[in-house]
Image (cartoon, rainbow, N blue to C red; front, side, top):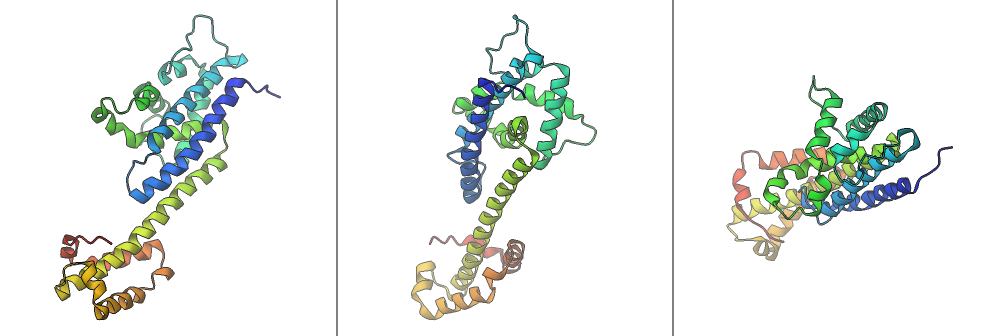
Length: 257
């Protein structure tokens, strides 16, 4: 039985911590309909440092012991990956690619996954440092933010977890997004119905509609007629499409309620 090393335990705690923070990030970003949440940068910092520790764990294993001249005092993914022996490198890339596909990732046809991974390590070689200081040179760093989790998250999970565990994690992310989509679509249907009656009645806003008992009853009846609670997310999207077809002017009305 392989002896568990302190650095391995430490690296694994970062995976556990990342999972906890990432779930909060995905939930909040789904609600906000954006890549960002207050948990994003802390999540990425933990993610990238966890990857660094896993690389250093692989480098410290007996069968892959480094010579005394090798410097482990670095955060660079590129340098750490470079020091791994050929067999370990291949295993890392092969495992990452399996988890990357679970995440929905694809590599363009004709592009070698090993070359792609080497470019990934090169492009994101100092990502741990950059994300800790993301506020510095923010504009130039911003374009990489959307790529970080889809590309690097599978790598962290691939070091010590199973495909089944990661698949379950990804399915939860999808579920969060679907739940958010459903809530947004339900709200959109009500907003669109109200917008229609604002336009038809000449009333100014939602408060006027609510104060007009007759019109508000019509809004409620129309909303119920769609039997929203019985519909799938896809069906709700189709309802929104049908309501808005040919009536783009309804989007010109801002409603706050």
